[in-house]
Every structure is written in structure tokens, then in C-alpha cells.
Amino acid sequence: MATVKINKIITIESNPSNTLLETMEQAGLEPEYNCRDGHCGACRCTLLSGEVEYVGFAMAYTQSNEILPCICKAKTPVELSDVNYQPKAKRA
Picture 1: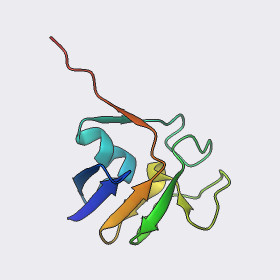
Picture 2: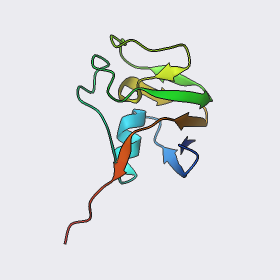
Picture 3: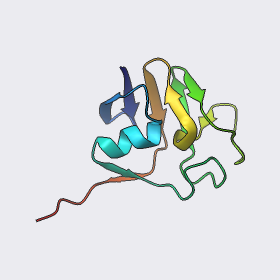
């Protein structure tokens, strides 16, 4: 399992079979997204370090240092910045 550091604040463990978006959700975060298939770019963030593997075709425009967590899996420990998320609301 690779570690995923988010916005220099949170570090979580990535399940190799999950995308980074799914990994964040399973860790109790609600990352911003719309499509889950690389079309909209709402989940776009910056890859500061590490390697990812795309499991889908990115249709949304990205800079060379940006990734789409909805269609990426962590190949190595990664550090991400500019991730828009909120903690999941706890249910009573």
C-alpha cells in the first residue's frame, strides 16, 4: 500500500485496487468530483511527488504536474496539493 499525503495535512493509505478518489472517500473525506471518469476535471489536483498510473483516458485538460484522482491509482507514495475536499459529515 502506498501512502497519500494530501495538502501537507493528512496522510492516508492507498488500496492498490482503488483510484485516489476512492481512497480519499474510504478515508472519510469528500473530495470534489462530478464525473468519476476523467471528463470534467473537477477533481484535478497537483502531483508534488510520486508516481500514478492512469486507469482511464483523461479528457479534461491538465498541466504536466496535475492529475485526475478519479482515474489514477498510486504506484508509489504520492504527495498531492490543491485537493478540494471536506471531511465526511458524521451521522447521528
